[in-house]
Image (cartoon, rainbow, N blue to C red; front, side, top):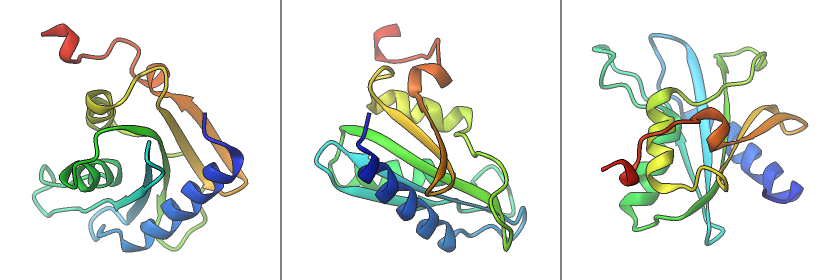
Amino acid sequence: MPEDSVIRTLIEAALSARQFSYSPYSGYQVGAALLAKSGDIYTGCNIENAAFSPTNCAERTAFFKAVSEGVRQFDAIAIAGGTKDKAIEKYAWPCGVCRQVMAEFCSPEAFYIISARSVDDYKIKALEALLPVGFGADNL
């Protein structure tokens, strides 16, 4: 589990990344901040598309940025999402596709997902709690 100061830094980065969301259709802005084992942080935002299925979630944007730079080991991700121009009212948890991407690169027991409404209001769950019977390389 990341230290409190690291959690705060991740949440601040996720809240900041949320500002870059391209969400003209839903108005639902999401930012994510992914902590690599090296201590580096990779951010992402959701990017919508008029055809909907090409839409990419903030979490996957952060993962794909990191992986495209050769990073393959991660400790945690912070997520903040809510309707544009409103205070974040609910915790935003990753969708099933994002959970599956996380399972590709992260230990289910040792990777933590931080869902934040603010830097002082957040919940943390291990990936295994959100994807209890996941599919991975061991299944092949």
